[in-house]
Image 1 (cartoon, rainbow, N blue to C red):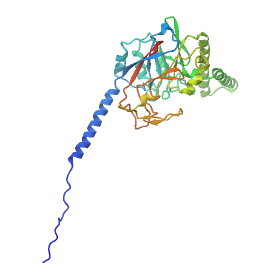
Image 2: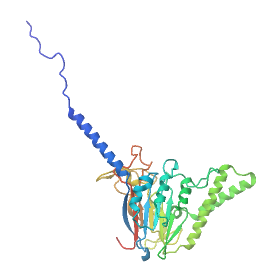
Image 3: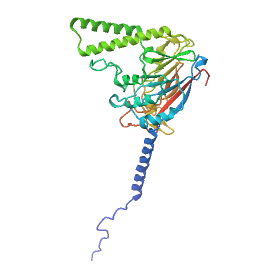
Image 4: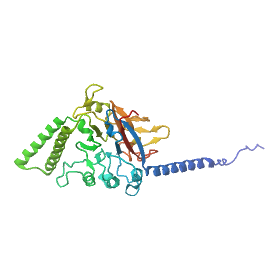
Length: 364
């Protein structure tokens, strides 16, 4: 009789590994906890303090303080900006600078207006638009007001749309707040070009009338010429020993700053204006948006300035640096930017921050 071959008729049941499922669930649980904590972290604003050494700062301006806020992006921090206000309600500052990307989707200004309501009424507030804000001037539709809604509403709250230099008198000295674009523009060429455009539109109006879009364009051109005329008047009042603060949404690079000034290294001065630039304030990068503990930002988007890198370190993202001898402070910001990829939609391990900058003539 032949021997029966040994073997099982059915394959043995595979052993289950409950540990794998438990590990996966634990991982998802930890991720959920971290994202929840991150969401809570993103709802509270941190106030940071920064001293800025300004060469040649008059002694009476030592201690002049600027509250710098950037990239609000239409976000409400608590009821009517209550969480943000809690950080500044006991602080003293001499001016507020808002460096762009202030509105929400479609130019929604509600969060910006709530912020302005929370600021002291006796402190000047200056703002410049960002690349994600609507154009500040309407140059196409004659049926709409000249200024964008968020600009007009902010001005009703007492803020100053910075399209020309503005002076703040403090302890007998003057601090000028200006858009950086004025320092980077050939003012004579700009005035000539705008004047030519105005004359062309006026000539067309005399012959056959203007289209609605041309009417809006003429209104915008006249407004820009008015800003340049006011700039010229301000320049006549400026003095060499005044203090000059520039606002820009985008941080200025070395090429930009080199174009602001002329003269040798020790006696450089502004090309368009008297004196030397004292401080540049900017925003835009939101401190990298995603940051990893002990590592820093994950990604810096590319731009026309030659940036763009993985794990870029701290360079050019936020904080105080010197660019051709001029202090520049880049705000860590409050919101997010569409400059980052879609898979980075929120701030990660990157608490929203505003800054109190104190000018000093002491070496830090």
